[in-house]
Length: 251
Ligand SMILES: [Zn+2]
Ligand SMILES: [Zn+2]
Ligand SMILES: [Zn+2]
Ligand SMILES: [Zn+2]
Ligand SMILES: [Zn+2]
Ligand SMILES: [Zn+2]
Ligand SMILES: [Zn+2]
Ligand SMILES: [Zn+2]
Image (cartoon, protein in one colour):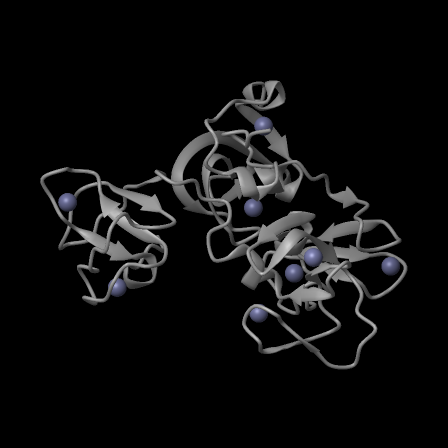
């Protein structure tokens, strides 16, 4: 099993496997009319980009819709009328919907899927969450879970409270439960080695994303050890390395 380089639709535990392409991904149309605002969508390859629909950073193919919105391939596979595992009724995309998503409790100014029969609302961010994921907190696969009957819940990873009305990951064997963002981390859909080529005024070489740094380098910005996600200069003669959080990667 490996993660398709283009879609990264497969389970996120295999991100560093040598890449292969799903046949369906090599056949993605270069140009199509997307249902979102009925605009022309053009296929682009991006090294490091934030999807404006699910808000995740991804590397791979994106559709640029109407010259204005970047949509990742994970989001682009959905139609504007969907059935999802977390809800019993059909959901319809509503551009004007500003209600809070029932999965994560946040709203998005580009709209959301909403139910025609009840008040359920779902954003792209929750719609595209992997159905299962691994985390070192539990030896089993954690499954995306939509209902929690308890009145008060805690996350076993960050040990903070967890709103039982929102979606979470859980293991039914061990009774482990955790926030989706604690299980997935900040960059679940970025592959190691993804190229980040947005320069700032101080450093003007391409950077590469890595989940972990080799050895014990210190961040060029804050001076602390690099023990989490980093961006590292591609030039071997340059020692620039920064925590992702220390680099303004939003573009
Ligand atoms: Zn694929
Ligand atoms: Zn997306
Ligand atoms: Zn959500
Ligand atoms: Zn409903
Ligand atoms: Zn947590
Ligand atoms: Zn377990
Ligand atoms: Zn830093
Ligand atoms: Zn450099």
